[in-house]
Image 1: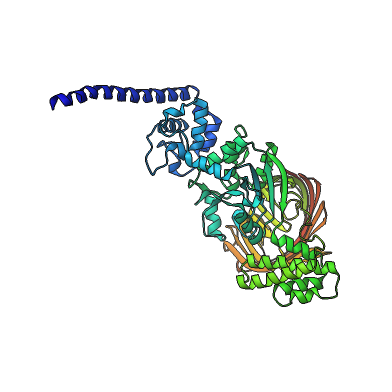
Image 2: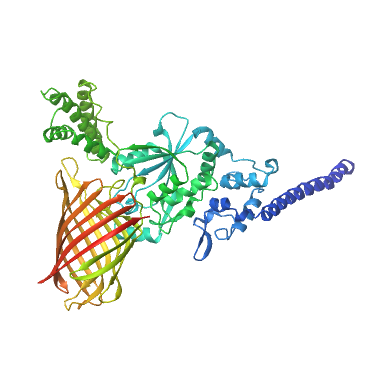
Length: 631
């Protein structure tokens, strides 16, 4: 027995020597990689900062990713060097069944480090991320497209529009592409609480991947948003890098801010990861507007072909515009089941009118079903009957596919505006400068923007009165949003507004003081061919300030106005408003005026306005002219 065990005791030192040698070799190799990474200062490399979303802020350098699981080092959120060191060490960790190895948790980091340090994959326990390679084999990505659904006025987070990416695969249909989207996770969609949380970053934002046709249906058919598609000229290797970074961001959250770290800003990290050296995220200001990111992407030379996809409501409005009133009512009656499409098709009316009317009925049926205004059974019965009637009419005019695209959103005026001008308050002259960080006023040139919409954020005005030799803050518009949405036979939207600002109010003794104002309202709007859009709104009005006798003044009233695009370069807005304040400081405020804007160039305009204001027997007239530069 002792003799048989003797060879085993001789083997123990040999095994230990080999094990020690292997362990020592691995440790030496890892140390060599770390030494080379520190020597080359890879932790300072801009691409490493892109992959970790590092940015310099008021309190130093930090990652904009807030999920602790995104970092391997304890202080990795604020220390790029520590995170790199821990990442390199983690590559040599043994694989654990049921857990993702760091090579697979962070494949973009791994591939970049492998390239920069020339890592020998045969010396790693996990030489590649098999699930990612399997995914690439399944989807076979070919190209990437930037998607811009236009503004959706009924959601504060989408008033500026939205951006997402689609990855086109080897399949023929673009609708089978995968959509990469970044958004806040919340069940809320409106209200002051929702806005406050979004402004303060109290929602978590996540990336998600889902079929493009699902997002297309949500934006185009349900939310009435036209869609613009911008193809990106990324190479095959760049598309791969984009997907590598997207893969490591799965289930990782960042705090979502409506005006800064939003959908558009975070998508730029994917493009920066795809093509090193772009630095798109470095071009953004403290606030990020989707249209501005599209312009930066175009400036970087990424954009190729541009495609316009009209929303279902746009298609309905276009078809309705081709018909006389009587045929529109027929189409509406078919969609609502009050007129049999077969009976209508047999009428002795022009064939073109019948064809367009039945097309209109079919589109309107699809719109109503997408809005859940009818049951599936009811929709199926009416839609099939309408299609049969349409088939019997023959091909006819290509009414469905002849919608002329409006001006491209990215070719409209830029978001920031600086204004300089002069005017008169009665007979007192003044000079004025204004700065508006965002975004679009009602009378600004509407090419590329949603007609009848206004979104103004932090518009501040300084006035110098020569006679008084004083420079004063005249107004600060914190938020000023207007949505004038005309009603017609097919759509019944509510027009609305909300304004909160600091403005200079004239007191009963003639003195002027800055007062806080909250002014919401809602109403209806209609379209007239000659007049343009006209509206009528009911409004509430609250003023708060120490200069008021009772510190507040509250009331209600109404406003009416006409907005018209007179030409492609001339907009005008005629308005009147009467508000009676019966609570706190009692007062009646009436104002009426005319605003006009003349487009000189895409980013230059000249505006003129005159307004009369009455308080009791006191009536004053103010006029102003301004030169506006968008940047």
